[in-house]
Every structure is written in C-alpha cells, then in structure tokens.
Length: 108
Length: 108
Image 1 (cartoon, one colour):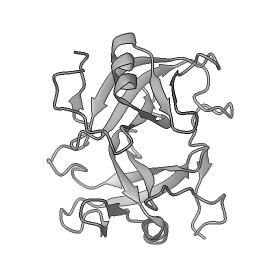
Image 2 (cartoon, chains in turn brown, orange; image 1 turned 45 degrees about the vertical axis):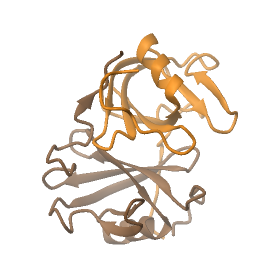
Image 3 (cartoon, chains in turn blue, purple; image 1 turned 180 degrees about the horizontal axis):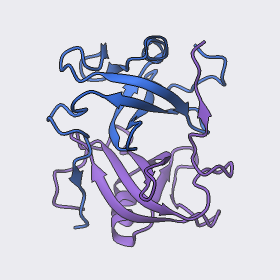
C-alpha cells in the first residue's frame, strides 16, 4: 500500500472508485475496491474490483475483453473515494454501451 | 421522483453521486444523496446532498458560496450511482482546490 495518507475503507472494507476515460474525460463506471483490489490495481496497471453481489475480486476485462489500462489513480480530500483514469478497450458497460451512465434522469 | 427506472438506494437510503464539471469533464467530488436530495437537486437545479457525518441535508454553496448549477443528471446501468454534470462556481473542494481529487495515489 502507498505511503500516502491511509485510505479510508467503509464498514464493509470497501472504497468507491470512479473510473474515467483519460482521453476524453468521460466517466465510464463506478465500482468498489477493497484493500487488495487497490493494491493489485496499483501494482498491475489493470483495474481490480470487489464484486458486492458475487463477493469476489475480479479484474475488469477478464470475461468481456474490455480491459482498462490504469494511467493514474487519484484520491479525494476525505481519502474515501478514488478516481482512476484509464485507457478503455471497447465498452466499459456490460450492456455494450461505452459508459455505464448512458441514461439521463429527468425530473418527474 | 422520475418515471425512469427506480433508483436503488443502499441500506442507509443513500446513492453515490459523482459530480463532474460540464465544461472540461473534470471530476470535482463524490458525495451522497438520499431520495429527498435527489428530488431537490432535480427540481431546483442546485446540488443537494446528505451529510453522513452531520446527518443532515445540505445544499452545496450555502456556506462556501461555491454553488453548483446542475446541467444534467445521469444514472448508471445498475441505477445505484448518479453522474451530475454541473457548472461549478469557484472551488468544489473545501480545501480550496477546484477538485477534491487533487492528490495522486502512488504504488508503495
């Protein structure tokens, strides 16, 4: 783990990670990492996450081929959220859309 | 609340909101909203959040003057995260930095 101020993981041992396209700034997805996923992401240059539904570590792209190459990892003032800038191969979203945020929320 | 597929709030009744500068794509901050904060944000065009530490609703900019004007609200494929594109007045971070993500996390 880095020497930088200790990251704050929540009660479930997780930290929120915002994944952003380093080239055009598009926010691609939000997922969760535990301490091991953060370590593996920093060491390998690939994004690792903790799946809250499957309760397992997973490396983005292993199933889909839609690999994320990590260019920079930033953390916020509270040290409880990460911003991971990546080069995205293919689509980030499992629906096939490039970004998971492909729908607009309208006022009622 | 919108007609769009129901948003999924967590056990604490909260949803993660990523705040992005609509002009340059910079990720400014990540905060949490409850159902009322989402409603007020959509209705008022200003960002409202739920403070987990103070346990109260707050409107960004009321204390700091650093108002966020909402340009678009998107939600992700799981409907459990929001992406709010804003025009930011001044700094988004309470430290005075424009973005809360002003520090880089280095591998150990």
